[in-house]
Image (tube, rainbow, N blue to C red; front, side):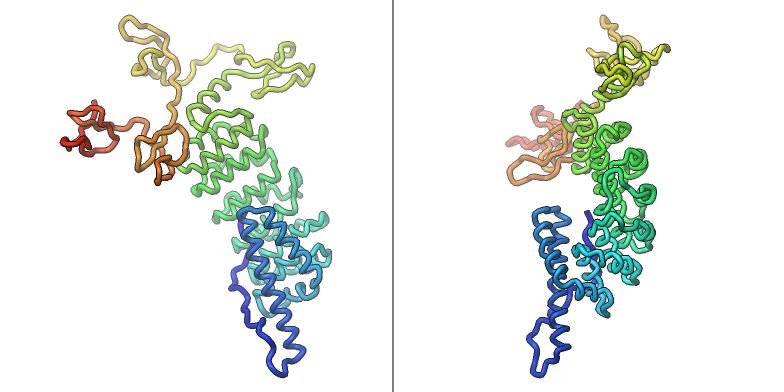
Length: 426
């Protein structure tokens, strides 16, 4: 989740100095107000850090102090919205979200029209923080179109606090549009909001662009949002499987967790395992033995007789189509064709079978002997680097005298007294 919004410098501490001789009552009031807003500024920073981590216990602690502080001094905080000091306007808009006071609604609805972007952004987020069911969605609809990215983010944060699962108040289409926003943080916050709403209609929209976004954080959150939808995101299966080939470990992790949530399966993170399973699933369906017209891609019960569905091979009644190539011999994997047939090797003649996808391999950039089929970190003492995808068909180099010396890059033999140039292995 993005931070709350302040584009201004922290408040000056000069107002905390002891009053000089002859200090007037007005000066004392100004110094008391300065102390109030410096405290809000401090709590703003604390809440932001806890919000981004996220640290719910720390959030709760800061929230409790803000509720107490703003509750006791509501009028002074509210007056900050009309202060000539823009920083006070920003922090007042933030703090009023913790007031639990209905009088704050009208003040914040006015603040969303402020010329200061950070005030508009915090006012939108604060309206959501108040959480009153009768708060209008109209200000949010307008703010989602604001020219300032920070304000569009504020609207999304406010909606994330205000809306709930399957309660989008007619704003789902406007939220979907933010998935194409030119600013990464806006796209990211839109996905976080959709994760809370869990609307099946969002699945094709997420598959259209976010799963292929240029920013890895957006791709990871796209996968996490699909995973939060569970079986409603079945159509995302092929895309999530392809995301297991992503170069960024965080994206792979999110796609793997999502696949497990969607299918209630617990395979490892390798692309080959999930791809092989999915291709087999496509050849089967779940049907009722009494009601043959029932055909589902997932387990369940017959909607007519409530009997548990059986998993059977698909039979469309038409001539079965040959699976897509390439095809290979189970005994001679070097034999590859693009159509079904029999192995042409002497004394073999076995039926060719579809070649299964190769599992991706990940290696340490510093220690190529560290290999896994899933993203991880190098386990060598003192290393810990992220493993990177390795070429599935690398060129190996070997010492002409010591064939056990094998690398994937040109080098010299490290055997004592040798030092010969390694050569490509046939």
